[in-house]
Amino acid sequence: MNMKSTFNIFLLVIVAFLGWQCSETVTEGTVVKGKIENAANMQAFVDRVVIGKARNIVGKTDLDGNGNFEISFPEGIEPGIYNLRIGAKRLNLAMDGTEQTVVINGELNTLDTYQVEVTGSEDSQTLINMMQGLMSRNVTSKDIESFINTTDNPTLGAFVAYLALNDPRFLNIQKQALQKLTAAQPDSEMALEYAKYINTVERQFASQMADQRIQVGQPAPNITLEDPYGKKYALSDLKGKVVLLDFWASWCGPCRRENPNVVKVYDKYKDQGFTVFSVSLDGLDERTRARLGGDQNSISDQLDRSKERWVKAIQDDNLKWPYHVSDLQKWDAAPAAAYGVRSIPRTFLIDRNGNIAALNLRGAEQIEAALQQIIAT
Picture 1 (cartoon, one colour):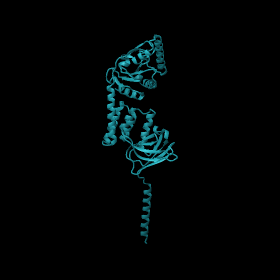
Picture 2: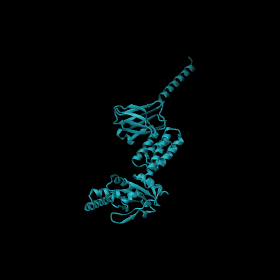
Picture 3: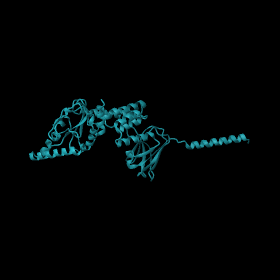
Picture 4: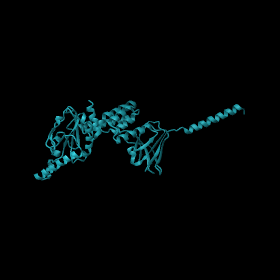
């Protein structure tokens, strides 16, 4: 064998060796793996998620005694939204279809609060960051709207809107997410099902609003009542300001828990023409008076105590605006009848022209989102 033949054989061996080496390092498909503390010997599932439909299991495995797991998708994983589900806990993931190895490390009890580390899936990490921000109240509806309009993954944008803005008042933002998703994937199952979901919510909300005595856009009925010290206040005198009309009572637990949210918004916007007009449903209605047997002394005593509790609640909850009124007739209160109030807390946002702008806002974020729309105009 001559030198040239020897050299050629040597080259073929090198090429074959390198080819073998390369074939060993190429990763095909997708692997989802990791370690979940306190989940030893449980089962892990990966579910495909479509808005408005039941989840579809696409992979499963057993965790070992240390909580390690690995689920392989030899053909790769399709772009979309998924759950990693272990027991009653689940973690949402977003895949763009290019993932090879996705590693998830966390603890079972905090899995559904997104307290995990994820590598190998940029969209999943984005989703986790958004959900952590929402849970810590560092992400607002405006942030979500901006995310929807800037993300390269409209499926992720739609899913974040669906999870975070499940209140009919944010339907306009959800419709933006649907528009982006439909433009990118007009025939996708996610787009079609999301459209059905939004249509259903819209119809339900319209039906609920039809039953309301007070409608958005109509003038707010005036209320003129005394505060605890005998000073009269009229809602109509606040025309020119944006007013949150708040029906509440000292005995109402949900009202008391909501009060810090109202205070937070008041402190932030009071210098921008915003205030609160609080109507208390403390006092005695006819049903309560009847239980007292018409005993005027008992009725007077109960009224005095109820008024004291009202004043104390104003002080304890630091409700610092001056407009606190009541006729002390509880559910028989005239303003409650005028506004169709049958449960509390109940709120009505009134614009500068004295017209109803929004109904039944709860939480600082909802109040602030509606308020910003009025102040910006």
